[in-house]
Image 1: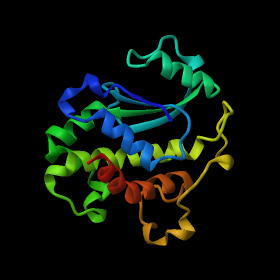
Image 2 (image 1 turned 120 degrees about the horizontal axis):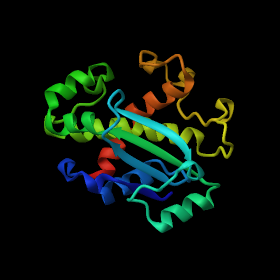
Image 3 (image 1 turned 180 degrees about the horizontal axis):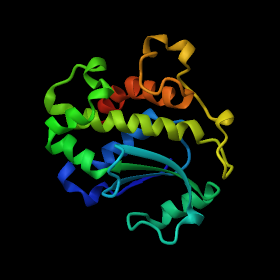
Length: 194
């Protein structure tokens, strides 16, 4: 999997792009298609959004894309994974923790993890990324333009993970899978990054 981000445009977050890519590759090795992680200043309603996109639908490529990344997408049937992260919510996580704690209250991060408050920004980032990366893993093997739920890969099935029945969106198998992935893979991403 080849990964490109626009994180270098946002030095205020002090996220090491190289370490982040290594952590993602190590912990989400089942994802094969190219991945673009985009910090988006226009995303204000959601913390993050996952999409499976086609390069053929773009009028122009993001400036952070290299010719090798574009070639990799074309070699994968013009399909790539795109994760948009809200600039505002990310900014709050790194620079306004009291607001971020309010924004993420329903996530129950502290219920699942015991961590030093100084690590909160990274716990937020990895919790969010684990969720969105799990969505990428769910549909990585599909080659069709129209996504078929029945063909999606689900790692964490509700019947096997009953202790997490109270997670948000537990009525949808793909959201349940992504929520449990956030719980199970956040610390793994954190440890791989540091």
